[in-house]
Image (cartoon, rainbow, N blue to C red; front, side, top):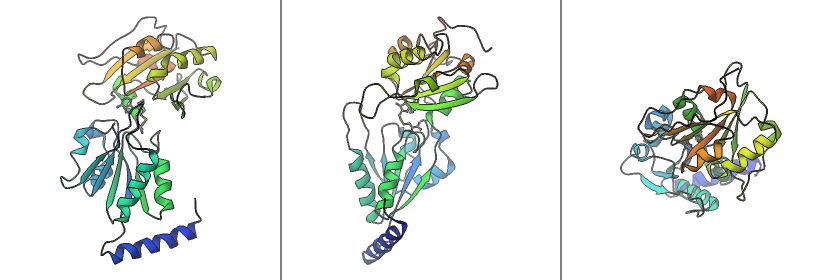
Length: 280
Ligand code: SAH
């Protein structure tokens, strides 16, 4: 990070450069696209999208949302696959900066919220380092859509006094290094992003740290999308339930998930098995 003075000097220089080419300096907008349903886009996100010259989006952004950008806007997918990165984070950062230096309005469109497991912070820093104007538009993160769709509140009087969002995926791959004792506390909802393939070790860790195997759990795949699937289970049943899904999905563990209901669509799956008790 450079000092604010350096940054503003650099920005002045870039504005001059932009002016010399007859264009004002561009800007980067980090925009949350929400969990998938275009109606869950904010009005601000829609307005910014409609002004985009370039839309750089990841794989979680649905076509219904991309269609809202002007037909003339260039669309670039930087979708990441589990084992293969189409673009490295550095390449994405450089791309955003380069387009903005051309004077373009760059919309970096991300699933959910840009600052929840979205690497938005790194892109913001890259833009700041380059002296480029950068704005952030928050989005509805997947956890909120998952709870809403299942009718299961993430906090609930008497059942969940806190909710914690964690990643189920270690930065270098493999098991995440989490505060298992903290996550195992009762009356607490734990939402695990990117945890589907790690459901078995995560459940084992939580139970070993003292979370009861009968704690209600919910898995939501494709929250807010037409193909949303919800599996209602328990912590002990989490790994089996996860094995039937392929994501994107959230694992949610906590007493308040006793209120979760499976979807009404043909795709809905219910696993009430081994489900212990209701809310205390
Ligand atoms: N920034 C995003 C999260 C990106 S990490 C947000 O705020 O939602 C990617 C992970 O998010 C996926 O592996 C999955 O765990 C979760 N996810 C994103 N969209 C989802 C959806 N529609 N339904 C369920 N999980 C989703």
